[in-house]
Image (tube, rainbow over all chains, first blue to last red; front, side, top):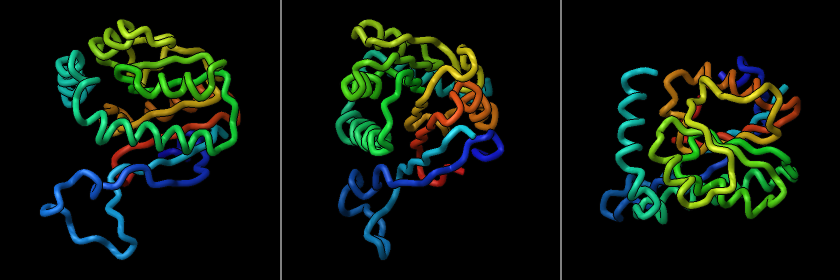
Length: 47
Length: 151
């Protein structure tokens, strides 16, 4: 969708992990990397 | 605007008077803003004109003004109540009630566009992204932070 708009994706980055706000007893099993991403950023440049 | 987007705007209008005091600011929105700005700063840019889409009460724009004091700032949000709160707080930015799909700016106006936890509310993400591209100057950057799995 970004590319179709003329925005070239430069990269992605984690912003906020779900496990930071869930009460401990409700946390899902942690994945191998130890993070449960909730918010992710994409950086794009106008072509 | 779709009825879902209309409902979202209504919710944010209702939330606006207490929005900045909500505990989510400290636990969620604040860290998201800080990390997003960190990513933008990490790009090594010195933007002259910055737009925040879905600016709410302007918390991120306050941080942007501290990071790049010389930059001209603008924010759009469809919820009039959020913009009213931002103006009352004295946010040093041009604020306009608008959606991403209808940005009221000339083409190639901004060299940095930011949006945090807003994209999933956009009634037409495709139209919004086209507008982002239109208002970005060639080579300008877009930092979009939203709930995981932005497409």
